[in-house]
Image (spheres, rainbow, N blue to C red):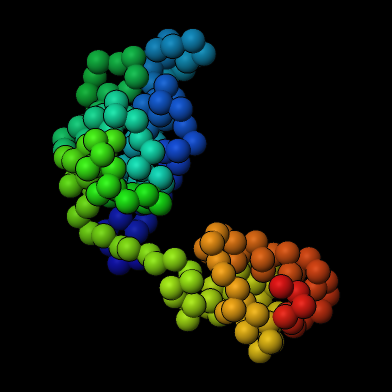
Length: 196
């Protein structure tokens, strides 16, 4: 909120959800006629994020070819649309997230070391939910608000049940548990242990 990019666009890319053949076109865009079905010029997510933030989710899943193209962009801030010779510039802040240990992937030769160091500027390690249970009440409150049920409260026994539960699915599992409890809750306004 305090950065010069706060008013800029926020563009997210799930690196794991896109096959390698589409990833380059998704990131950098494509020119008309670059491949079958490319009926018009299309800006990529890098271009759409210009002046703002590009979020690369599951960056550890990038293929070696895609890693090289991303590294070039990070180093030079330039790219070409697929099927185009013209170099373009984009000024973006890049955030990357992964659920794998990139250091281990680098050691195994599955992730480029130079890309790892370009991405590892400011690191935020987020512990598993089971290692930060003190966040659980705030997370439940957040999910209730996002689901349009901010009037719902959590009873002491419900909180105890949630704190005693293992959370192998982390925050996503908690969100699903809250959503399922709300379905069972109906019009009531207090979640109890029986809902979980």
